[in-house]
Image 1: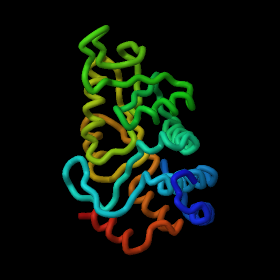
Image 2: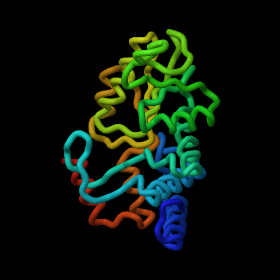
Image 3: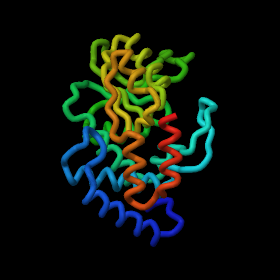
Length: 234
């Protein structure tokens, strides 16, 4: 697996993940009963861990708050195969949703949105953090029409603040936004905050599912697992 310092250790971890996925309850979107999806979800999380996109230790979040884990999904661009796996997982989360276009939240979700756009064959747009002061002065990049239905794609959510800013900009432009799809929900208020704005959150994984999967695969010991759970419940 890319990013692993010891290929044999990475291979052993992946085998453990596969065995865990075969025997454990499925994780991910809506607790899918599809064993193939469960296996792929477990493989994706193991890949993210080996890539260094999921780390445990002592970190400071953008909010200034301490955290015993850090998730950096920007690293997905360094592993094209894993990025494709992530796009396939997002595509499953989109099943049953009605939409005309995808909208990536800048900046971490933009490569994910591009990979997903190619996977599902739907066009992508994205809002700029700052509107252009030259050319057409666009605040949203891509072709679109007011009244079109858009699903917002985000890498992960904590409180949902950056996602809400994107939704507000899209709605102000006349686009219809009711659904947000993320890879990981950190379970720290985003679902309720998005619901208050009339948004449905669809997460491939909750953070609890991430922790359980990594623990079953032997990648997260019981002591750290308990520490992170205590942090989530605080």
